[in-house]
Image (cartoon, rainbow, N blue to C red; front, side):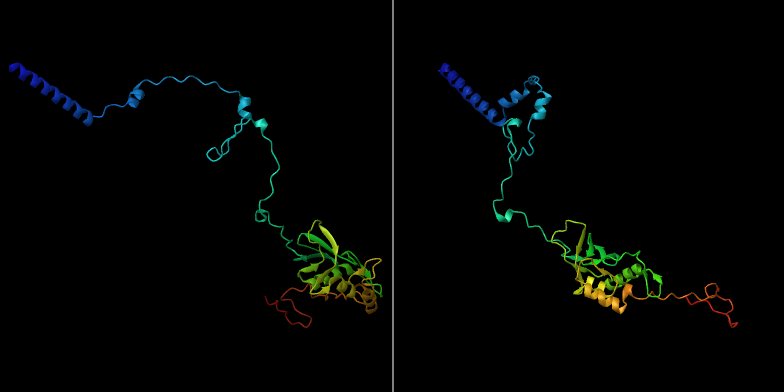
Length: 255
């Protein structure tokens, strides 16, 4: 009987020890195999062979590697081709807009009677001869006067900075054009010739009748020289406060 009690006690100790070992494995985490591998000394990586500089230069550079996969081809195998047409007419480019001026010469600068510059072009009126500002005329009494400058001033007074409607082409490819222009529905060349400030172009009968009428009426360059007013003697040199001819004291001008 005593031997039987010893065996039972030994078996009980074995069962209790197994239970304690199982409980310890649950409460305490055992180090994983990965941790053991990490704790091991890292192996020294072998040095990689450096590729030649020419191969680096010839290698295709990925523009967006996160979005577009890089093709596994050699650079010399790539060939540029023409772009394809648009898949839909809505993807095609918009038509070219019409020119902004639409035949208008805005804020014309007049340097001579019959010629104006504006909107990036120089326009010469068709059917007439441009009257140079240096031109001089002689009237019937033999007086010489600068009719070219008077013609330019008259043309400027007629236009007064308003836009000219000229027969310009849809696309302005030149810097100067010889075309007909209108202002307020009136032919500008007709006005110049009719007022005697321009001559018709040689070989053109467009304004011949108007030129004859201006010559007969003595208008513009066909007329008399403008009157020249002489400056009164003694008035220009008289200072404010000097005595006049009658002994009265002249007062200074009102500012």
